[in-house]
Amino acid sequence: MRQRTRLSLDDLNKSNVWTITPNELSQMIIDAKKKRDEFSENEKHYMNIIRTVFDIQYLKREEANRIDQLENTGFEIFSTPDENGNNTIAIRKHPIKKVTDLTMENIVHLEPWEVLELISNNMGTGWKGLPLAIQDIIESAFFVDCTIMPAKTMRKEGGIIDRRKDDGYEVLEIERGTWIEGIFMKPKPRVEKVHIDYSIDEDEDGRKKRRKDLDGDEDEFDDLDLDVEEDDEDMDDEELKKLDGDDEDDMDDEEPDENNLRIEDIDAIDDIDEEED
Image (cartoon, rainbow, N blue to C red; front, top):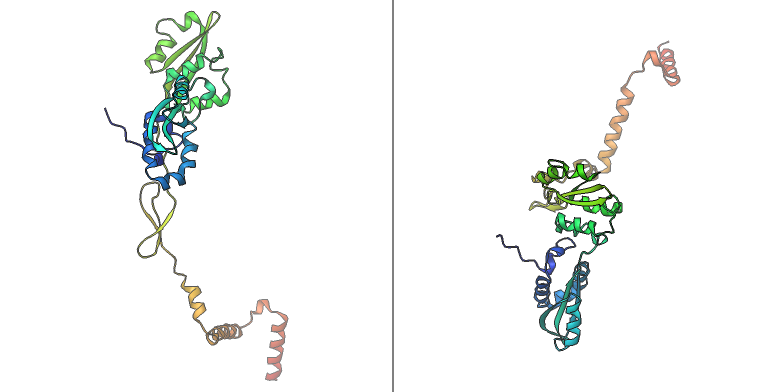
């Protein structure tokens, strides 16, 4: 049996917090409180995550009546180091008692039979009577098939129930008079979410590079050497004037196109003719 990696409060998020027990949570809190300053700074963040799944109360071990009341309502009691007069913590995990308790975070931690039991207890609405939002939550983690047939057809040997069971589905049968609503459910493969890091780092030469691309290869993004702009800034006024002058000379050396003469070109030709005469 593979041993589960021990989590700390810093590791918790709104998904994996469903995987821990009250006993594990109490130990996390005790360990975190040993670093008083760090715990105080992050306590609000920790509790925002924890309270989505657990109820927590701090109290004194001497308060026997209060402890009894909490235990009767499903709390588990744990001793903690004394802090501000409190030396006990009471923790209760929120039970998933009805379909409306289902969320995108907790659905992946349930078994098919547990979800089917919630549907069975939902006032006989069956699958098609569930709100679409609840159906979407369930279908995010499970393959679901729903069929309504006459009882004799549904339950015949080698029929749909036997075939679905052979495919790994759990089955819930809800009677509808002489017909049966069959709800078939099995888990979807768990897919780990890929987190792509688009942040930019600089290497030792000061060049920018992306940490990882989709294939896991490193792509470098070298700084461009914009020499043109730098050269222009380095040029003095005399050099710029010289460049401008060269352009003007080039324009003067061009001979007019006889097939496309402009008025000023015609005047220039007349002046030449007068000089020749």
